[in-house]
Length: 198
Picture 1 (cartoon, one colour):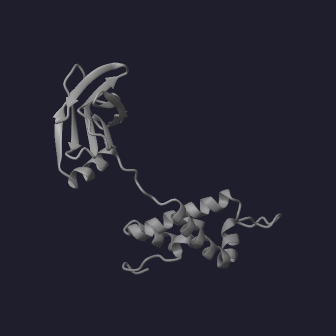
Picture 2 (spheres, one colour):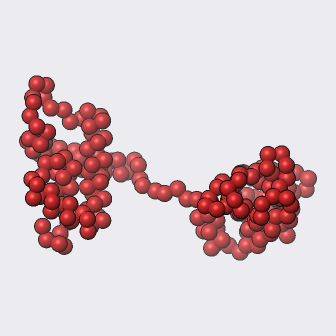
Picture 3 (spheres, one colour):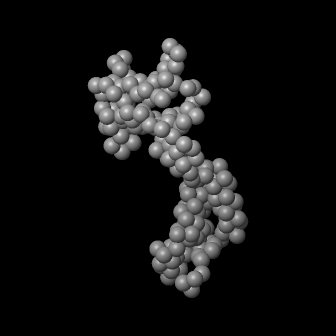
């Protein structure tokens, strides 16, 4: 295998354990350097595991041959099936990372003008950043404690959500159409801090 070549169908054969030792060593050396081929081998292994769990691949009853011999004989129909299954699994279960409140808040701040206010009170140091048009609020509290966050406007009170631990802080990002006069942090039923929105 040339250094600039990809492993191609050898990924599926590697996952099946159907390669000769020299071929297996070549694939292992290549995937140590090539992320694209490493991903393909991983997908092939996941597909094989899914097929095994679904009992799709079965040896004929009473046939006591090694899996390698069985796989080599049946590779003609297994490779297209494996590729199709990998494709379908990739479509059904895309690998996306959930966005944290921090990521959502960062994107919101990039796309708008914002202000901030300090929470005052007996609770941990905290701050709220908010869009000037009040379309979003981002509450950051020092420490890992969870707080309920309420918005107040004209005597009405609305729970915006709860802060969630994230690193050394506890955060809440929420989109809202409410124009609140103040936000309050609650630790159970006790007000831990108040921030005036200007």
